[in-house]
Image (cartoon, rainbow, N blue to C red; front, side):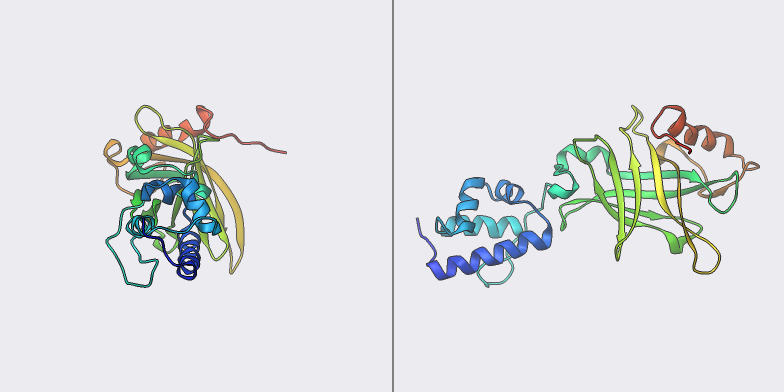
Length: 245
């Protein structure tokens, strides 16, 4: 097998480490995509075994970029999320890829419910699930971010991180209908520049199951009873709990 010269092998290893760090993909994941063993990859990166041309070609095809400075090559879709997001495979999470009606209590109007749309889909370039909110009356506060699904907890996390400021939705296992319930933790805008930590129950219902007009749903609204019953499931069925002092 053709092997790269030592100096070129070192440059290739450096370029590969940069790509893995930039994409936040694990060595195991890229080894699987390139159809090489993790041991082969580890030894090549450590310099104890030279890169072969065949190995480099497979790695370039998997990452969709040249590791030898020869320009782009045909990209392969990343099919496994980074370890930091639970290392889930795309095949295992296809069930969650759809549009949901999101329900939560209104922070500004006591007794009312807010309904908006949340889309969860796979990001081919990044290699993990993303979510994005839309159809919110307060569109300036619509959130978007990544989805973590670690096996250890069995929960789904919708995470927004904007310059270190976090907002989190933690969802329990889906029901038979594919509905998900849990807890939203965020900051509520107060007078002036005041921001106050706030949390509430939240429900994500597949859009096809809940045909309602999105927006503010107050007690006089025709959909209030149905939406209130759905949202109450979050605490009634122990998907999330409140603990006072």
